[in-house]
Amino acid sequence: MPIIRHYEPEDWSRLWPLLHSTFAAGDTYAFAPDSTEAEIHKVWIDAPLATYVAAGDDGSILGTYKLQSNQPGLGSHVSNCGYVVALNARGQGIASMMCEHSQAEAVRLGFKAMQFNLVVSTNEVAVRLWKKHGFSIVGALPGAFQHKVRGYVDAYVMFKPLAA
Image (cartoon, rainbow, N blue to C red):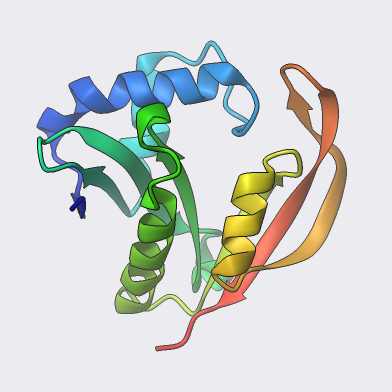
């Protein structure tokens, strides 16, 4: 059974290839497909409030998420997360586990809500999953994402109040 735990520096050598391949695909995240290892380390490890990994029984990294404030100051009560699941772990409930874990962590840390700023409309699996976990589409951003294959596609802002 996978466990979700805080990221440790020794995880990076296994986490970087997962993040790199996801962002290079150019279909779910706004990071430039050619983002460097240092750039991704800064935004996934250094900048967030916390980073977590979903680890398999064998120690493999099945997924990861980062948790941070969506905005500074007067918007800092709303959290924001980004999730990545390894290709070989998709369809096993890892994203769902991380979503549940992230909401509990956000509540524990005092956040009142969670917002996803750029959910790519063509990422139908993610849109369905976030809706299943209680998130609503509160806005559609026409052509806001430059999909590597499909060109300019819409993106959604999704939001959920969190109960203590």
